[in-house]
Each structure stands twice: as structure tokens, then as C-alpha cells.
Image 1 (spheres, chains in turn yellow, brown):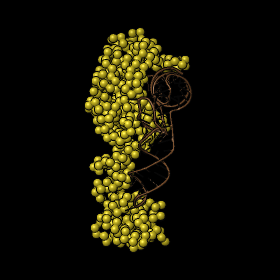
Image 2: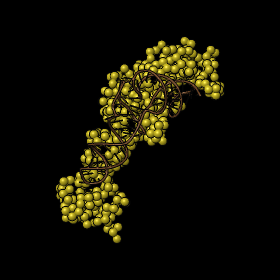
Image 3: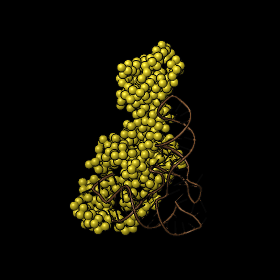
Image 4: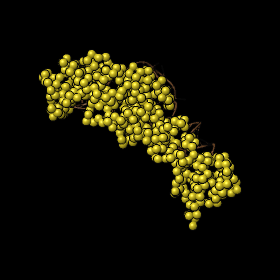
Length: 460
RNA sequence: GUCGCCUUCGUCUAUCGGUUAGGACCCCAGGUUUUCAUCCUGGUAAGAGGAGUUCGAUUCUCCUAGGCGAUGCCA
């Protein structure tokens, strides 16, 4: 059993393509079959190597590894040519010399009359020997197929026209190349976006003309933006790699994507292993789904909370480098990550939270410092006590804070909040004693001194 | 215009003729908590509209509306 993902390299790997790839991948793995990657680059005008690389990068980041390929259609032009010639020779295709202008006029006329704009077969019986090559689509009857997700679909051949299978420069077009490739590569389930439903009957006619067995078809509904419109840049990130940049874990994105249009009862969280085990084409929804960033964030947080520190570290590496954070200059990164695990929705947030342990800052958050740094007495006392603390451990630090509270007869918050701000600069810190321990004695004292300086500076 | 596909809470979805229409995200209200976060409890919120089939329709059929797609020498 084989399934495939066949993107055209005209841009980065986007969310919709990633989901198509995921479904095709999951189905192949579930069947213990092969997943084929094929680059559909017959449109040389728009295909770029940069796009190919971007797609490969995206697939690699997601971990959707292919078992065969990547195959490039531009490497297979000889084969397509062979098939086109065969069709020509069997009188199942013909050359057409109609100009683009004539075609446009024809379309306009038909549209105006309220009819379907399709080619009129003008050159069908002219026996020409140059121009584009058109496939002789059957004139009568209908094409029907049983789509694995949409069910029975049928369309009359009268709605179809003689599609172009080779351009005037002799390069083959999409509808021909997919058929040849899916056949040659032994693909038995074609999983793709439902924008291809309209192409399927044409392709089926091609299969029949070539006397080839039909694969199964599974057409996935589109992914829409939050406003129900087709997903585009204005909805935010559409590129898969942008999600890495924003701090998402690949398995969180995959989990989100698999639940978009597919379900297994009420289950929300699926490991990759579970996706493969539980995936069924029949549980794919027919209706398009809207992308909802909130739920993705929730899932990402779930994954961050339940991931091993080691796994997080692997995914964090890129972000640390991206932001040039040197973690050798501070506490063990493992401890910091563990501390931040429960309070980070994304890896980017985690990196933000991690900065205070490795980088010094030269000023406090303005609003918060005006509010928290009013009384120097408690901070001074805390400074003194911590300064003489030898065993710099969270429990001991906590003890010192409590002593300050007792001696000054104030609540924990009175000193805890200013201390938190002094340590972090922005007030975002978890258990204050643990944070102080991780920040280290030297840095902690320096920051408390900085807070004291701030107070003396603004008190007169 | 024509053809095709689609239609359950704001969003993702469950339901395989009989349910107080369930779950999740978001949001709201409580509780736990040394801020934040986590965690726990609870709450708001849905079958596009209209016919028909049936003892009974969210579920089956048809119509309408709306959305999306196709209508390329793009894929």
C-alpha cells in the first residue's frame, strides 16, 4: 500500500499542505505501507528550488518522513512524452492550434449565454501536427467514483472538455502527470485537497483511456481562516515553519492538524503513535474547518507541560540560538526549563522567561517598579539576610524571607512582590525562593541592590 | 452564469431514527496558590430555512438559502 504527498514547489509548506501530508502519511503508516513524496514541478515558471527546500524543511521539522522520493516530475518528462505519444497514436488525443485569443472569446461568449465555459473541440478532427495536445474526453455518459471521504460523486462528461495534456512547448500538464505518476508509482490511495475533486473525473477518463486501474480517492476538505475565508496570510501564519518560529512543538501542530477534520470520539490529545493506530479515512469530516489558533496554543501548552525536559531542550535549541542566549552563563538549563514548563504556552514564552537567569537587565518595568519599590526597609533587611546566607538553597532563602516578614510584621506579599520584580525585572517569576536559587546569590544581591538604588533615586 | 462539494454551540467535533444533543478550545464565575501560571468545580452557548418519509427526525429524501471550489497552455 502506498500513499503520497505531491506538493507543487511554488511557495513554503503551508498549514493546509501539512495537514494533507499528515493524513496521507498517517494512512500509509496505518496500513504499514509506504509514504511517497513527489514534487510536482511541471510549471517551470513558478516552481523554485527555494520552495522545494522550504517544503523539505517543513516536512522534516514535522517529522513526516517519506519512504520513497522525493521524485521530481521534471525528471520524468521522457515518460510523460511517451504517454502523450501513445495517446496521440491511439487517437485518444490530438493537437490543437486554437489561439489563446480565440479561446478567450469562446469562453466569454459561453459565459454570457449562461453556459459552462469549455473548449468546443474545434481542432478535434483536424489532424494537426503542432500546438498543444488535448485529450479526447468522452462526449457522452458520466464519470462516477466513490470518494473515501465525500462518498459518491458523479458528473456528466458533457460538463467536461478536452483538457490540455501538453503545452505548446511540449511540457506536460498537471492532469496528465498525476495520472502517470500515481500509476507508475503504484499509489493506491490518492489523498489530496478537495479543490481537486473537479479534476478527478478528468483524470479518471485518462486512466480509462490508458487502461490503467483506478486508485482510491480521498478528498480532504479545505482549511479556512477564522472568518471562514480561505486561509491566507492575513489570518496570520500560514507557513509551517512560522509555527516553529512562534514557539510551537511539531507534535502539537500535528495533533492540532489531525483534529481539524478528523476525530476519534471525544479524544483530543493524540501521540503520533496513536494517530497512526487510530486513523481512519471514514472518520474524516466532509465539511471545511476553520483554523483556531487558541486551541493550537492550548495543545502546545499541554505538550510543553507533558514533554520531557530533554525533548524541550532539543526544540529549544533553535530558539536559544536565534535569540543568541548563552546558557553557559548561569544555572543548569534543565532546572530552568523544568521551572518554566508549567508556565509557558510556547517555546518563545519559555525563552522569554529564561532570559532572567542568563542575562542581566539595566532597568525594571516602569509601572511595576513605581508600585512595588516604595519601601526600602524590607528590601534592605532582605539584602542583609541573604548576603550572609551561605547555603544558597531555596528552602533557606524562603526561611530568610519569612524572617523578614516576622521581624517587620508584614505579609509575604509585601516583600515577595518587590523581590519578584527585583529578580525578574518584569514581575514574571514563579516560586520566588526557587527562582532566587536559580538566579544565584551574586545576581540576586546585585538585583536587590539595583532595586535599592532605584528607591533612593526616586524617593527624593 | 454553469457544474461540483459542503452546512450541529463563536471555533474543532461526538451522535451511525428515540439522548435533558455529549466532549474540547475560548469566555464567565468560584476554589487552591508566595504574583503569574498550573490544578480543581461549575456555567453560558448549537442541529441554516422549508417541505416530505416515519409512531418518532440533527440523523433518510427533496427544495431553498448561504459558504467553498472548479470553470487556466496553474497545480
